[in-house]
Image (tube, rainbow, N blue to C red; front, side):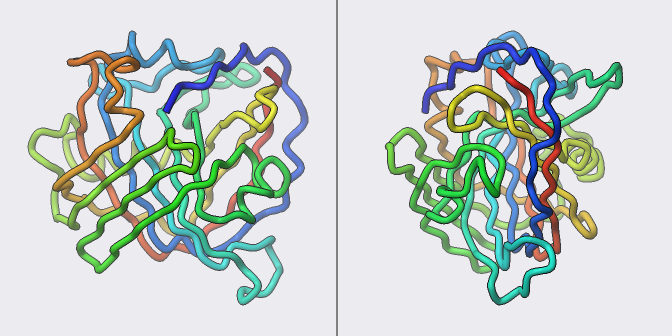
Length: 255
């Protein structure tokens, strides 16, 4: 996977006209890497700055299974289900003089053709098509993801644990949970590469569990042309399940 070229955002526009989308967040995995800030910052467009923890940028994979996804007020049985993956990094930025937090998303992949077609229309951002092989027998899970354009290859295998790994730079589960809960707004390039669409995730409740990783591969984060040896390492993963949620449009930036 190559990092897309994003120009500098210069003009704030009115919020993306997206209806509130609701559904069930059946499973969400956050697989998190620590990256040297001077390496990670080069892949961010202004106005974004890295949100650091213990001196490291925190980037990673967000792997989500969504069910019953539909505009708010539509009956549940009409909703869509899909597997999705996003490559992202925690960021901060200024908006009208106020410091805010969120995530910058280089790329979104989905196994749903409907989500792919509606990306940039009903759903903010551009979506690429991918195949997802999933073995999910709680507490164990394995995912194998391959994008149609062959740019994204992900493999993850793990099992739910009670504590973060001892090697993590996060002191405990509560510290990690708070770090990621604050980044509820994601910015991602649209299909034309002319603006960044924003989408905010709102959940009814927030509860994460450590996911012990037995094996993880990422064609993006393992790419030493992008991340030289020694500049990145895997830290820990979290998993959450069975939360009612809504997606809301949160504005856009022209690039």
